[in-house]
Image 1: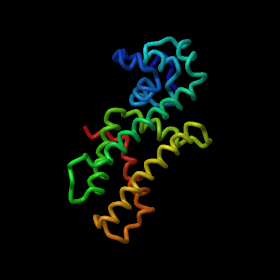
Image 2: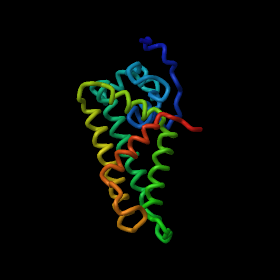
Image 3: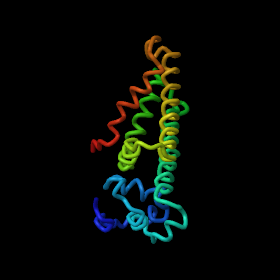
Length: 186
Protein backbone atom coordinates (compact mmCIF):
# COMPACT_ATOMS: atom_id res chain seq x y z
CA UNK A 1 0.00 0.00 0.00
CA UNK A 2 1.44 3.38 -0.92
CA UNK A 3 2.58 5.74 1.79
CA UNK A 4 0.56 8.90 2.32
CA UNK A 5 3.33 11.00 0.82
CA UNK A 6 3.32 8.94 -2.39
CA UNK A 7 0.27 10.74 -3.73
CA UNK A 8 1.58 13.95 -5.19
CA UNK A 9 -0.17 17.03 -3.87
CA UNK A 10 -2.15 18.84 -6.50
CA UNK A 11 -2.78 22.52 -6.36
CA UNK A 12 -6.45 22.62 -7.28
CA UNK A 13 -8.15 25.73 -8.58
CA UNK A 14 -9.24 28.14 -5.86
CA UNK A 15 -12.92 27.28 -6.29
CA UNK A 16 -12.20 23.62 -5.44
CA UNK A 17 -10.00 24.52 -2.47
CA UNK A 18 -12.72 26.76 -1.10
CA UNK A 19 -15.47 24.22 -1.58
CA UNK A 20 -14.07 21.31 0.42
CA UNK A 21 -13.57 17.59 -0.03
CA UNK A 22 -17.24 16.86 -0.48
CA UNK A 23 -17.44 19.23 -3.43
CA UNK A 24 -14.34 18.39 -5.36
CA UNK A 25 -11.29 17.19 -3.53
CA UNK A 26 -12.48 13.70 -2.70
CA UNK A 27 -13.84 12.64 -6.05
CA UNK A 28 -11.03 14.37 -7.95
CA UNK A 29 -8.46 12.39 -5.96
CA UNK A 30 -10.44 9.19 -6.56
CA UNK A 31 -10.08 9.87 -10.29
CA UNK A 32 -6.32 9.56 -9.95
CA UNK A 33 -5.90 7.06 -7.10
CA UNK A 34 -7.67 4.15 -5.48
CA UNK A 35 -10.04 5.39 -2.76
CA UNK A 36 -8.49 2.85 -0.38
CA UNK A 37 -5.10 4.53 -0.78
CA UNK A 38 -6.34 8.07 -0.24
CA UNK A 39 -5.68 9.39 3.24
CA UNK A 40 -7.26 12.33 5.02
CA UNK A 41 -3.91 14.06 4.61
CA UNK A 42 -4.19 13.61 0.85
CA UNK A 43 -7.69 15.07 0.86
CA UNK A 44 -6.60 18.00 3.02
CA UNK A 45 -3.72 18.79 0.62
CA UNK A 46 -6.04 18.48 -2.38
CA UNK A 47 -8.48 21.05 -1.02
CA UNK A 48 -5.78 23.30 0.42
CA UNK A 49 -6.43 22.94 4.15
CA UNK A 50 -4.65 21.30 7.06
CA UNK A 51 -5.65 17.87 8.24
CA UNK A 52 -6.76 19.44 11.53
CA UNK A 53 -9.04 21.85 9.67
CA UNK A 54 -10.50 18.93 7.76
CA UNK A 55 -11.36 17.17 11.03
CA UNK A 56 -13.12 20.29 12.34
CA UNK A 57 -15.78 19.63 9.70
CA UNK A 58 -15.67 15.84 9.38
CA UNK A 59 -15.28 13.44 12.32
CA UNK A 60 -13.74 10.65 10.22
CA UNK A 61 -12.50 9.59 6.80
CA UNK A 62 -15.78 7.72 6.29
CA UNK A 63 -17.71 10.93 7.01
CA UNK A 64 -15.73 12.65 4.26
CA UNK A 65 -16.56 9.93 1.72
CA UNK A 66 -20.21 10.05 2.81
CA UNK A 67 -20.25 13.82 2.23
CA UNK A 68 -18.72 13.23 -1.22
CA UNK A 69 -21.43 10.66 -2.05
CA UNK A 70 -24.16 13.01 -0.79
CA UNK A 71 -22.76 15.72 -3.06
CA UNK A 72 -22.69 13.26 -5.99
CA UNK A 73 -26.27 12.17 -5.29
CA UNK A 74 -27.54 15.74 -5.11
CA UNK A 75 -25.69 17.02 -8.19
CA UNK A 76 -26.01 13.99 -10.44
CA UNK A 77 -29.74 13.60 -9.78
CA UNK A 78 -30.33 17.31 -10.31
CA UNK A 79 -28.62 17.08 -13.70
CA UNK A 80 -30.48 13.94 -14.68
CA UNK A 81 -33.86 15.32 -13.64
CA UNK A 82 -33.16 18.57 -15.48
CA UNK A 83 -32.10 16.64 -18.59
CA UNK A 84 -35.35 14.66 -18.45
CA UNK A 85 -37.42 17.80 -18.85
CA UNK A 86 -38.38 18.76 -22.39
CA UNK A 87 -37.51 22.42 -22.88
CA UNK A 88 -40.61 24.59 -23.07
CA UNK A 89 -41.63 25.17 -26.65
CA UNK A 90 -39.59 22.27 -28.03
CA UNK A 91 -42.12 19.59 -28.88
CA UNK A 92 -40.58 16.44 -30.33
CA UNK A 93 -41.97 13.32 -31.97
CA UNK A 94 -40.63 11.14 -29.16
CA UNK A 95 -40.53 13.26 -26.01
CA UNK A 96 -39.99 10.42 -23.54
CA UNK A 97 -37.22 8.81 -25.59
CA UNK A 98 -35.61 12.20 -26.17
CA UNK A 99 -35.74 12.81 -22.42
CA UNK A 100 -34.17 9.40 -21.84
CA UNK A 101 -31.40 10.23 -24.31
CA UNK A 102 -30.89 13.53 -22.49
CA UNK A 103 -30.58 11.70 -19.16
CA UNK A 104 -27.91 9.37 -20.54
CA UNK A 105 -26.03 12.27 -22.14
CA UNK A 106 -26.12 14.18 -18.83
CA UNK A 107 -24.86 11.09 -17.02
CA UNK A 108 -21.93 10.73 -19.41
CA UNK A 109 -21.08 14.42 -19.11
CA UNK A 110 -21.13 14.17 -15.29
CA UNK A 111 -18.71 11.24 -15.42
CA UNK A 112 -16.41 13.13 -17.78
CA UNK A 113 -16.35 16.04 -15.35
CA UNK A 114 -16.03 13.82 -12.25
CA UNK A 115 -14.12 10.69 -13.34
CA UNK A 116 -13.37 9.69 -9.75
CA UNK A 117 -17.03 9.12 -8.95
CA UNK A 118 -17.29 5.71 -10.67
CA UNK A 119 -14.09 4.57 -8.99
CA UNK A 120 -15.46 5.62 -5.60
CA UNK A 121 -18.79 3.91 -6.27
CA UNK A 122 -17.30 0.64 -7.46
CA UNK A 123 -14.78 0.62 -4.62
CA UNK A 124 -17.59 0.88 -2.08
CA UNK A 125 -19.78 -1.68 -3.83
CA UNK A 126 -16.94 -4.21 -3.52
CA UNK A 127 -16.83 -3.84 0.27
CA UNK A 128 -18.67 -6.67 2.05
CA UNK A 129 -20.04 -4.66 4.96
CA UNK A 130 -23.02 -2.33 4.88
CA UNK A 131 -22.14 1.29 5.50
CA UNK A 132 -23.70 4.77 5.42
CA UNK A 133 -21.85 5.33 2.14
CA UNK A 134 -23.35 2.18 0.63
CA UNK A 135 -26.82 3.22 1.82
CA UNK A 136 -26.35 6.64 0.19
CA UNK A 137 -25.31 4.91 -3.01
CA UNK A 138 -28.45 2.75 -2.77
CA UNK A 139 -30.54 5.93 -2.52
CA UNK A 140 -28.83 7.35 -5.61
CA UNK A 141 -29.43 4.16 -7.61
CA UNK A 142 -33.04 3.89 -6.42
CA UNK A 143 -33.85 7.45 -7.49
CA UNK A 144 -32.07 6.92 -10.82
CA UNK A 145 -34.14 3.76 -11.46
CA UNK A 146 -37.34 5.67 -10.56
CA UNK A 147 -36.50 8.37 -13.08
CA UNK A 148 -35.77 5.81 -15.82
CA UNK A 149 -38.93 3.86 -14.99
CA UNK A 150 -41.06 7.00 -15.22
CA UNK A 151 -39.55 7.93 -18.59
CA UNK A 152 -40.08 4.40 -19.92
CA UNK A 153 -43.68 4.36 -18.68
CA UNK A 154 -44.20 7.66 -20.49
CA UNK A 155 -42.65 6.18 -23.63
CA UNK A 156 -45.04 3.20 -23.50
CA UNK A 157 -48.00 5.53 -22.84
CA UNK A 158 -47.14 7.66 -25.90
CA UNK A 159 -46.43 4.68 -28.17
CA UNK A 160 -42.72 5.48 -28.46
CA UNK A 161 -41.76 1.92 -27.48
CA UNK A 162 -43.65 -1.38 -27.74
CA UNK A 163 -46.51 -1.71 -25.25
CA UNK A 164 -45.08 -5.02 -24.03
CA UNK A 165 -41.75 -3.47 -22.95
CA UNK A 166 -40.74 -4.84 -19.56
CA UNK A 167 -40.56 -1.44 -17.86
CA UNK A 168 -39.53 -2.98 -14.52
CA UNK A 169 -36.50 -4.74 -16.01
CA UNK A 170 -35.39 -2.02 -18.41
CA UNK A 171 -33.91 0.37 -15.81
CA UNK A 172 -31.82 -2.51 -14.43
CA UNK A 173 -30.49 -3.20 -17.92
CA UNK A 174 -29.80 0.51 -18.39
CA UNK A 175 -27.97 0.63 -15.05
CA UNK A 176 -25.92 -2.39 -16.06
CA UNK A 177 -24.99 -0.76 -19.36
CA UNK A 178 -23.90 2.36 -17.53
CA UNK A 179 -21.41 0.24 -15.61
CA UNK A 180 -19.14 1.67 -18.31
CA UNK A 181 -18.90 4.70 -16.00
CA UNK A 182 -15.15 4.25 -15.52
CA UNK A 183 -14.44 4.54 -19.21
CA UNK A 184 -13.37 7.95 -20.35
CA UNK A 185 -14.06 8.07 -24.09
CA UNK A 186 -12.31 11.39 -24.71
